[in-house]
Amino acid sequence: MEVGPDGKYISKAKQPGSLCLHNKGRPETIERLEVTELEAHETLGIWSHPDGMMIDEVNALKSKALKWADAVRTKRINPTEAWCSINHTIMKSIECPLAATSISKKDMQDIMRPILQAAPPKARIQKCFPCKLVCGTCPKGLGSMTVRLQI
Image (cartoon, rainbow, N blue to C red; front, side, top):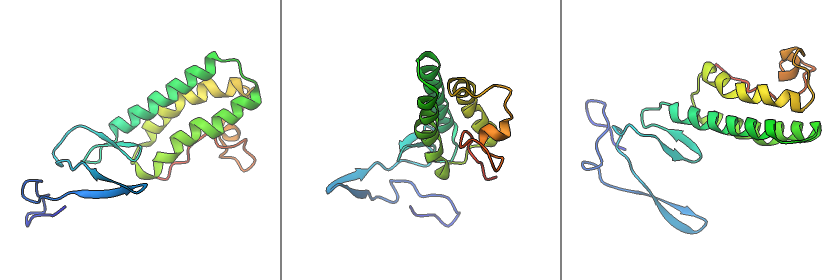
């Protein structure tokens, strides 16, 4: 995308062109959007606005976390299955897009809240157990039930 002399992006009309990517040998043209559009689009599994806002990504991750927490809370699973479900399903779904996002610590805590409320009882971790041990911030912690934010 070209930048004009005033430092602003040039519109599609003034700078025509398209981006074509090969998807397993099948070429696909990527839709080009104007920077002024206010709606988010999912690209490579991440919902983002052209201006960099992450509101829709936060909402998507919250809905994943709530759906997972509701499913775990209502199912009969043993503690081992619960622990595997935490570490190999929902935590990977939450961790994977974080490298490409700019989600605030408060939003991340809101995303993690339903998971941290539903998961420990199913994994037979007592509610009064110290959070530093459960979340893995202590050197002898139980694992990765927290997302480490680098701020």
